Image 1 (tube, one colour):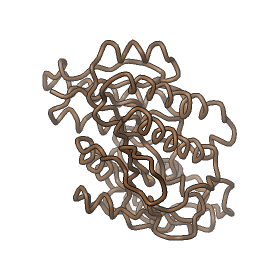
Image 2: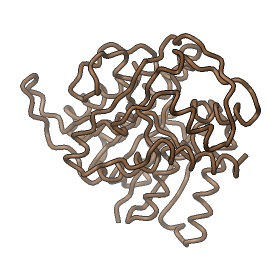
Image 3: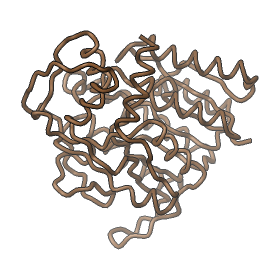
Length: 335
């Protein structure tokens, strides 16, 4: 039985991934620091749901959760000493583009220091595959569409994006130096039930329900490659047991077993269509406050997912209308 560590397991993607892993052959250890960036009660409710699944299906030998911060190096070392992990999936990070403008220290501690601490532990063990969450934000304001992993990503326009790009560089160096097979997953605007309250779809749903105005930037003309959580999880799951081979490149002689993959919907949707989907699901019209583009925002995200599709048969299947409908159903039950 393979043992897998999921960091950020009380987070949106981590919570859904743990559920998927419990349906498979893996033993799972989840860790999270339960920080207060957004509603801690939502994080606790995710953990409670997982615990209920564990108890209902008698999976207590397959799952364990620990409250642990990646910035705490000694606690992390003890975790790796006590457990022989085959796979490590790092989904722990300080999220949010706009929040990074006001709270840079949180991003340095979690996304940089915590990330290095985790890799330091991995290098001491024979980890079969280290997977980590990167982000479509690394593409910044790149002109070429769709975004491809072969594109230049040297121009981040937020600290959050810069930390994610840094993760990719750090992971590559550890992969090269210590032969840690590593895959960076560039997620594109993930949404769905149990999502993050700081995300636009969550905020819009609440405001429309409360008959309050929603702020719409760039006159609703921004496009996002909204990707439903079930499609994201399917993509991650397909990659776990397929670590990368050493790279062959005409740019470098480095032979690191390292790769980057986009996980998106390959179908950008305008903010206007996105809002209409929420209105339809709520059976309620939005009151709109039109605003210019914000600092740190990008006009479009569009994922080239050809590598993931060709190598792993990944094919996202959830339309924005169906995905938003599922989210709103959950939202009404939860709140």
